[in-house]
Length: 285
Image (cartoon, rainbow, N blue to C red; front, side, top):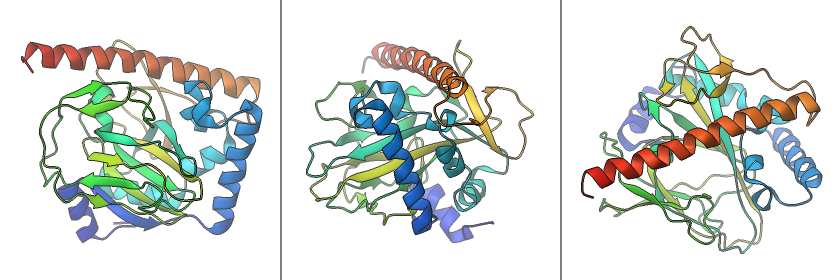
């Protein structure tokens, strides 16, 4: 083990989530928030109000974000649960403005990913305090047996997830765990972890970033060949087109890579939404 104890790994395997894990220094937090501020200044709006592509894959266009996805304390913990050969294949800003109604319904991240096998882990990094008042994630334990549940993309108003994906079948909603995170710490959760989050009732902006990591043997079951970035170890499988880190912030080359990564991700996402709906329609659900 590099960062976690065996007890922590066992807890992650049983519950599907683990928190809190300290990582960033105050200077590193400041650097990340400054990078986000520059991005939003360039966009002329908060990330959440800009074109959807800007919420994801910032490692393709911003060196500060590329440094974050390679943070040794994050990667050491990720390695302890998925092994030493690690890809980042997507990432997302999860930002809730002060006193905003933004929320997430009960859902599983991996529903519309199409990954095989199901071994993705998300490191959710808090750049500001993600307290219960600020609308932190609430997780329901998978009790060692994670499985895909039936979802529908409901397009819910104020959903932090643009599709508004929501679980449509009964599951155990009792005793969810409020996964509060102080700024600079992160959590881990499996792609089938069942979770939600409430609105931000705090007076500060809740800024979180989800970093989605895969072991290199995982592939996407899709006619679309997706992109990823190797952040530790080696890739001997070649299931993704590997992209290089940006050499400058938001330059033409970086923005072209970001556009390619985003276009392929969105194309696959729509394919997976349709497959999921067909699967459950066929099952009579």
